[in-house]
Image (cartoon, rainbow over all chains, first blue to last red):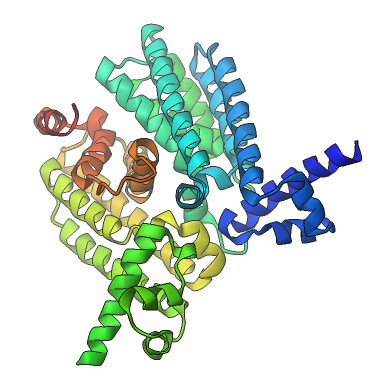
Length: 211
Length: 211
């Protein structure tokens, strides 16, 4: 019991430190020091930093898979807003993954390979979603346009939070990302294609999120 | 003369190593070793890695400023394609800057602050560009839509090359990025708004870049 608690605390502390300081800057020594345990105790639970990174990535991946399943029920623009919002919450909670991807690629090739598999799944899901919205008449888009939209949506959900920090944040700021605004921004990609009813909903979100 | 050559070689070698292995992974020892000079000789030219990073960022910034000036002459969709292509060439040549931005933020706050200034300038320029294209009738967009497009264009030019690697690259691949494809992808954001003549040009690019 105490042991599984320690294991969980290591994962939570690692996640917080990776998110705050970046994956390259955080060693297992630092994680142990932050928790007030010995490095030996930490290594008893996770032999290497790599194992911690793998566990955290698996959780992130599982979390997105759950959101994907729920996303199968999206039939209107407000369903999509909610699904995007939940997705950005997950990406924000595990934000080191997409933000430090270049480092993952060079130092954690197995996790990087899994993240490419995840990205391929994201693209397939987004394409299916855009095709469904087109079939339902929520968006008015050709097959080519729906495919382009799917790519834009995956690109935006993957990179927006990193970009947003770049544009708005002071180096010292720890203001949390506004995942509702991120979801709204992603929806604006659909603006030229939506039906009048959905456009009214987008206008409502605009009045809520954009000053 | 020999001295200024060494200085230039240090900058070029650093740029290549930062691009290939990531800013966090490359020390001044590694740069000196790669060049076959002593660390002392390197430090004679650049006291710290921070100074090298600052010099490289300034060059990147100057390069984009030159492209911005030329961008003042954009009056049609093919001018824009060329301007975007040149911009992606520059971003690709200094790709560590945007890719390793999270690390810049935590370890090189002065350079990160300059990159935020650069981003603000990019947004202003993109907004002026979209307003001009709307005024010329190249795109048919309201003021709100033009502003949204400007944000989408800056987001895409900033993050696309990192995303593209994530989607398409094998860990071991060193295939160079296709900056023409990146420019085409950015142009597709304008698709819903362009006049028929520009749409024909986009269709031409599509046939050239998308299989």
